[in-house]
Image (cartoon, rainbow, N blue to C red):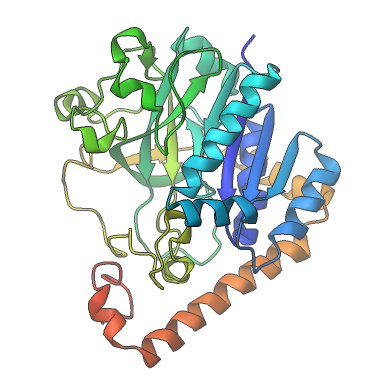
Length: 344
């Protein structure tokens, strides 16, 4: 029987950790490891309270590994993923390993299914690649719940992959495994519907995207499982997130520069078809939200979540102050400020 660990890296995500952990436990993830780095909020307090009640959810101080990656000029994310992959292969307890960020949620097209169904539907695989589905910018209130009874999602050509620990697929990179660039013919790489996936041939994508010609067969329908990527959340949260920078990528920019603004994505090679509606049964959504409240109460997380939210609100104010002091940043990073009050 398949068993799976989920690995994530988090920097100042106290406002979101509880909901992220709850969701993935609710779908049947066996173990969760979160590597904390550069923490200035109350993330450690949140994770201690969760770990007190859920021994299968662990957290680690990754600051030393961050320092190592910066000195070596290597991707911190890949160093953590490689470390986790090697550790689990030696441990020989679980069958699969997945990697997500705290703004990414593994979701079934029929909401609320257990992850066992994903393994059954996909069949035997070395790599299972699930497509990104992004949220859309809108008028959501800050810190709205992740899932609603109806919301619009944009399918993307980008994937996040799950690896079978006994497979010869190399080591994990940010979106996939490096074995696909040199040994693809011997790797069974599938989508959650059990069909063979075709990755983009361009070397620079390294298994990050699916083949453009393959995209046309996927337009207008959901795969059994996908990764919901909450890029936007709300206007204020999006702006606050820009203050996080990208030191994990050895980038000293004061602004997180890998965003394209608080605007709907234009059709491109990154998108697959038009946005689609995702619906959740009313009763199912009610039970999901109620169980989340039970999780918060069981772990005594209420005050810590509020502290995390207040930290994000302060980051928004810090951004206001930063651009007031250095207005040239608005021009330098004009792309990321599109659609925000700062652009106007």
